[in-house]
Image 1 (spheres, rainbow, N blue to C red):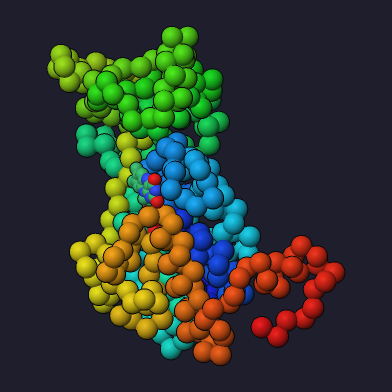
Image 2: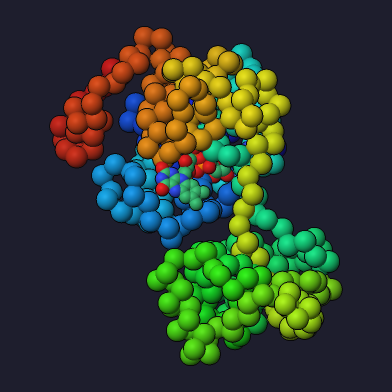
Length: 347
Ligand SMILES: Cc1cc2nc3c(=O)[nH]c(=O)nc-3n(C[C@H](O)[C@H](O)[C@H](O)COP(=O)(O)OP(=O)(O)OC[C@H]3O[C@@H](n4cnc5c(N)ncnc54)[C@H](O)[C@@H]3O)c2cc1C
């Protein structure tokens, strides 16, 4: 397994806190790596409620979680962090210089670590039925990797949230036949998306079946069909399909983080006022971090990210100032806006 270059700060988690930390670290001239178990950045914003409106983030009277995530990604990636997606951090090993994170795919050394892991690594909720394990990745997926994969296919989408409804709408013109099933009549999707869904159902582009659950997934090498159970009539039907998209949400798992010797308080990590954990050089911020008076909010995560990064920078170089001052006055932005005004930096 290849060992990558040593960064100043390895950030575990690419949610709002990790993304803002990546921006802030770049602003302070620190090199960063973000590792996340999900296939896209954004944390809970993208995994749990992309189409919901958020009203309590400063500067945005109303913004969808997805738009906020897009803005955070634009801001958080401008200093070119090394981004590793679909990799769960399984272990953390201390060494002479700092720490190395171990994932399924790599070894990532850094001088400090910022844990911005929210509620833990998100893993897709499985369908609990025969055929699930055997056919996962063989026509049965939890993510849409590319809509074109479903071109001309008979596709079953399972789920009643934003993700299931949004992907049904996105794939309706691509597939040969698209069936959306949900185990209840009520959906947890944005009202605008629901209006579009009903239009597509009325136009015959999406076949909607409510009170239905997947009982079994069939196929030898690839998915060829599913058994669908009507939980009102208890009748079972067979549907021939080429692909199943199980978009029934994610469940977080703190898992490995609990085994690193960190001081825990239920499912959170205790931190000091500088976001320092009980292990020197390991900081925590966002939903995962706790202290007296903690509020689990996006806005809190931003502030904690800035505090943690400033102290991580100071931990790496005790001569570096903890407080960098205001971004309005920082040379790094002036240089980008007027490169001709750039002067060599002593740091
Ligand atoms: C339905 C809903 C509505 C909400 N509405 C609001 C609201 O209106 N206003 C508000 O302020 N807050 C709201 N929140 C809360 C807000 O989303 C969280 O406070 C915020 O997402 C926390 O950000 P975070 O970056 O700390 O963690 P997260 O967003 O949870 O991101 C953590 C990331 O770390 C990754 N990760 C964890 N462990 C590992 C590991 N071992 N290896 C690799 N990756 C790992 C996870 O996959 C995840 O992507 C809402 C939450 C929900 C569920």
